[in-house]
Amino acid sequence: MNKLLVEFVGTFFFVLTIVCVVNGIAADNYMAPVAIGSALMIMVYAGGHISGGHYNPAVTIGCLLRGKISGGEVPGYIIAQVLGAILAAVIGAAVLGKGVIMGGGEMPSNMAAAFTAELLGTFALVWVVLQTATTASTAGNSYYGLAIGFTVVVMAYALGGFGTGGCFNPAIAIGAAMNGLAGWGTAGLAIVADVIGGVLAAIVFKAAYTSQGADD
Image (cartoon, rainbow, N blue to C red; front, side, top):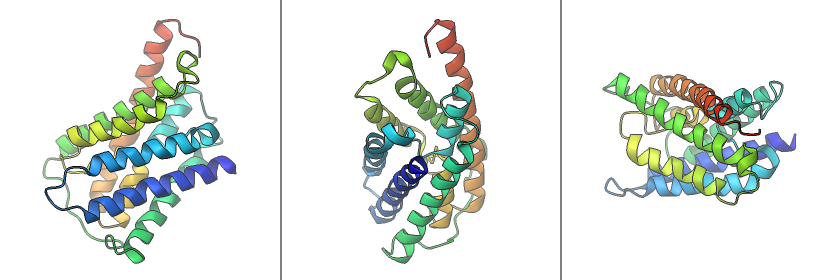
């Protein structure tokens, strides 16, 4: 239960940051990805030693394929993450006035580009998580949270402008749709792309890590 509580709290504050920052910035303010990536970094450092600091169903799935979380734990992790995202969206809109609960949102104009951007951004994020936070060769490092958070910063700048806003996280996609930052069609596209990106990252990681004879 302590792991699920950490996943819930971490995802809540991660998504609340997104809701408040994106709804509160001026059109010419390009610093939102820095705040969002920093929020993830903080929560990874805060909860990584308890739950692994996933805050992302795609990361959880990647860790499952990596063998760092059991199949029985996965549903609880994902439920906690999604509930944290939904609560953040609702509180952001209803209490803080940032967003509109169950708002609209248009589909991306270029679906192929949006799907590819989401897949690649999630691949990069899960790849970095697996490389920095799950291997014996990097165990005990002090940079994993920074690396993970700034992967989100970089991918948001590089790939966030293709129609989905750069979720790279199914829980964020659901929270964004709940908060009116995206439509449910866009959220669905992001969720599918994110899951595929996480699975591919785990497969490539295992191929690369095994081929060099590294110790799990």
